[in-house]
Length: 122
Image (cartoon, rainbow, N blue to C red; front, top):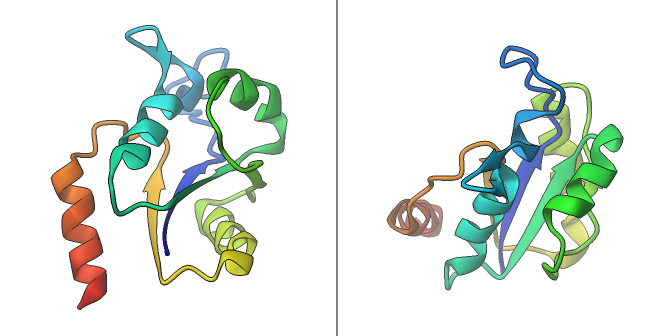
């Protein structure tokens, strides 16, 4: 099983503004939703798991409205901690491969995902 772990616990302080950048909209759609969609479209990604900041639960639920996703995992105060918590949170699924991706990078190409999966196979 290949799982995409989308890390979305960051605050985006450098950008400023009233909400974290992953919940801001791009073409009327939350950035995080664009990112999730990119991984859900890929035929070799069998599950998408998102790691969020506990303060963002309502923003997250609103952003993914209508998507069939597992409940989000809660991240830590630093990206490294959020990734660790995410990896620990998916151990019950016993993934063969995990792709870790930042929620505010919505323009990941399908070919790039394929390249990463192929590299993991090696």
